[in-house]
Image (cartoon, rainbow, N blue to C red):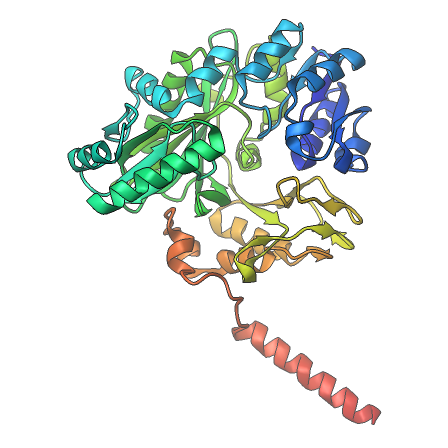
Length: 478
């Protein structure tokens, strides 16, 4: 086992990895930019190394500085967290060349799954269900129309190197196919430096459901159930839950088997996530594989009782998985809400500034809070404006919803705007409660954006009573 690891990340995920490493008796090294000199993860770690100015391109994304920080501190391994360099094969190769372990998969697996076109070809070869489509790069607008007609409208035009919702357009006719191809290619070129675009069938009433896999270097591969991630805004996940309210046990086994088949096909080692798009007819198709720890991993931990970060570290150290597929049990329900510094009343504009007041809900058996900020901390313009991840846990879905509703009321956040009112509205929405989810949920239920919710029922009665009491008190004092 490693004596010391470096976490090549910041914020809540850096804190999350440090907590597990500390419990395992492993010393930790944090890295930080100038903007993060006083950050929570820096104070939590046993050592901390500055790596450059605030912009990520000059600090957290500079491979040489991370490798040098490992050499300077004697760190034997690196956990990349998510984002930044977590899926960069050059980073993995640089660590390997320096004799430093990468707590994640090997270079071939990262490269194979990092290209959306190649990953779909590999998935097909491994017998994994894939969306009908045209996997070769589309040359021009005319070919975009020809390919779209052959697949059958509606189609999704997607950047090969895309991610985070960038470089994706839905086309329902020839004109939209031409415009979608132009837009997707231009956006992909700007965001990724790669303007290849391919096309696939757009699934009606789609759900986004992903399978968590784990694989060691001894030939063992298992899946840990699924996560429902259909509640998205502009292709970015907002709410995630485990298990899915839609899957049957038969579907779970089938999707898990395909996810494991793909992992084996690329020689995968570590934790990874195979994402599927699931249709209303319960058909499912491979979307992509994320070769890293997912933001939403806590919901899987809550229903399996496993620590994914610990397992990643143990796998990287050469250990064998301590269980087999038949040992995995899903118990209860967990829902995660991402708390962001953003203004939902103004189109979810990011809100930067100092947290003049910050208090998270009290944690316990039904509530988990993963955060990387504290009172007085700064929400910087340079990074993702996440404040915390709130996980509500219960014996069933209704109990998990009740847990997260109550916990959302326990946050105190001042100094920046936040999306808690929007998250609360989602948790109370009848369609969400019923589990009738699709990736279009937010667009369909909030077509004109979020404008707050008026109190009703018991809440309205309480506010009316409070107002009456205040008026009475003022009258008495006069």
